[in-house]
Length: 88
Image (cartoon, rainbow, N blue to C red; front, side, top):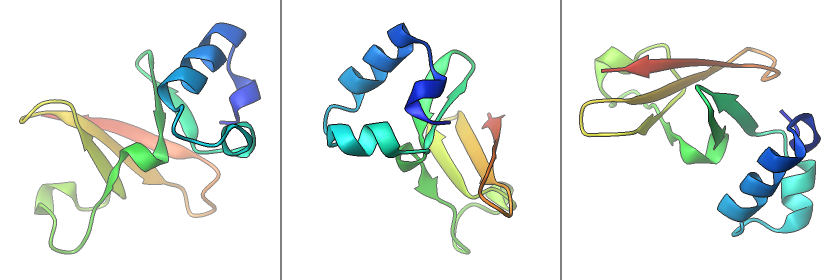
């Protein structure tokens, strides 16, 4: 999603949380998405590699919430959409 796809309040939260990004990058970046009430950016995720946990096979990235749980992402072939899941 693009920043302008979010409501004004969410845009302010994104700008505050991702203040390390240059404002122009935030405005033109399509890496943001919302899942279960939380806004993520694709840079928040670690890439799944061949040596990663075999249980993550088929996923492109993960972000741990706790030692035992986290969020998973998979990009569509055209990278136009993100499929999001959870692991426990």
